[in-house]
Length: 339
Ligand code: WQD
Image (cartoon, rainbow, N blue to C red; front, side, top):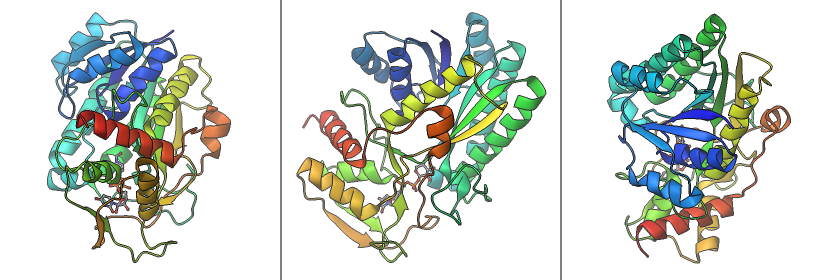
């Protein structure tokens, strides 16, 4: 059993990770500034596991808050760091807010780790660091290319900060590069919270089916893929959450082979946008209202993971398929719409 600080623990992937940490017998402690979630997620987590996690409301760019948090908790065995702004488009409009929030909070956390002799850190990274990879499937050795958004750049800078900090301060770090996390907890107690117009595909699909959105626009069907629409590696959020438990246990048990390790988190299978829509229609029995629209700038044609490193070295692999994720996403959408 390990006491683990989970920053952004009331968010989409964070809340699912808190549930899986509790299921594995650990003690997650949540910090969240509620900038992109609501506090009732805490009760929803509790309704799944019957264990209410300790929660501190606060902002990780507030140095005094962080110092107080670590004064009150001197026994963290690791940190899983989700707290960050993550909207690609918004980051283009507000780069300074993204660099301040995502990088300053990381540096403040690492300074506390150094000063409190905490040395295990899991970083929420993203396949966005690969851009449009030359070779598919994408391995961890695929080159990191110049980011096309400040959001993506904060992930790249974050990894570089962590590499330097791991060397200088004997930290053990694992960066998990997510492909496309989707879906919701099968209990429909937690899922992707719809704050504003969704930028990501799957919440837009379920909100369209629920009548919250008029129609889904498929951003381009003239790409060089099997049906002309983009290919992505959609991974169930519960599988992503379980990978975080395996990763933090790896560090707590000192099983890591390097001070800084990177793992892709995907299913290894690519699905097109139209295939996602077909999977949704199959599991929901709904006919989705969509149209083909213009391409969205910044979209890569195709991205899906080579999962061998995570399978063999981390000892983890995704267990749920696209249809499972679409079924759970739909169940969650209906739950929050009281349908
Ligand atoms: C998927 C596909 C769109 C919406 C981004 C970030 C990544 C991660 C996940 C945080 C694309 C198409 C989408 C719509 C559509 N975020 N689409 N109509 O862009 O692969 O990844 O979110 O970690 O870092 O880059 O995900 O869900 O936005 O798009 O046709 O209304 O769906 O063109 O092909 P993306 P997405």
